[in-house]
Length: 76
Image 1 (cartoon, rainbow, N blue to C red):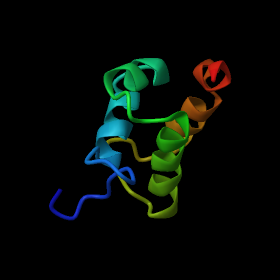
Image 2 (tube, one colour):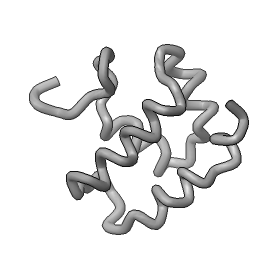
Image 3 (cartoon, rainbow, N blue to C red):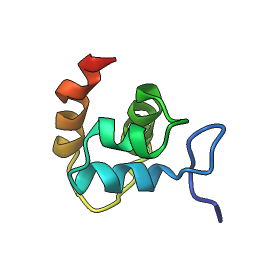
């Protein structure tokens, strides 16, 4: 992936996950599109972006905070 951070054990980039969330896809939609992903993988992508100050499109983490509080997390 040319140095891009990926979800452990996959070739799915962290930035892809974050871009999908920002585009309005629900966690369920992402999980359906990528059956090998888990909710924990998505949460790890968000946490990684915080820890590394990774910028995808947003300059603030407010969006990601809302994504973590999304009702979809509770449907595990």
